[in-house]
Length: 154
Image 1 (cartoon, rainbow, N blue to C red):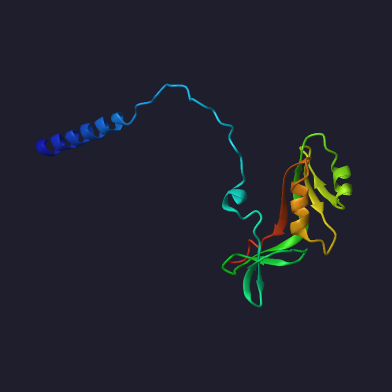
Image 2: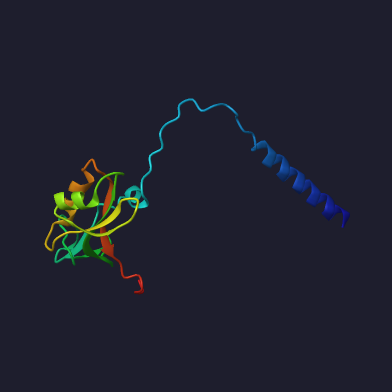
């Protein structure tokens, strides 16, 4: 029994000594602070601008999307349906109504921080539209809205 207790104490001391060896912290100021870049999970994964559609020739990257078009994953599983709307975050002070009018869109929803849901006309090429919106100096970020059937078993 004493041998077991002694071996347990020896193991505990060994582990604590190893843990303390890794707790050293350098208190030196960082040499060159760089500005952090914030990107969404979708941007990081590259899924914010890559949409795939099923064709007769297989799954292809979409060059054009319209309202009601179904998109799939790269492996061909049904993923979502395009709603024909864009989620846009405008910079502070930008008028949502004026912005929508300039781009031929309709404001469906808006909150106090200038986050908008903009509706495009039927038949509009959504990929070109979202790229044009992203290029606007009045926009902080923009993405296509899509309806995902989350209640369906995947």
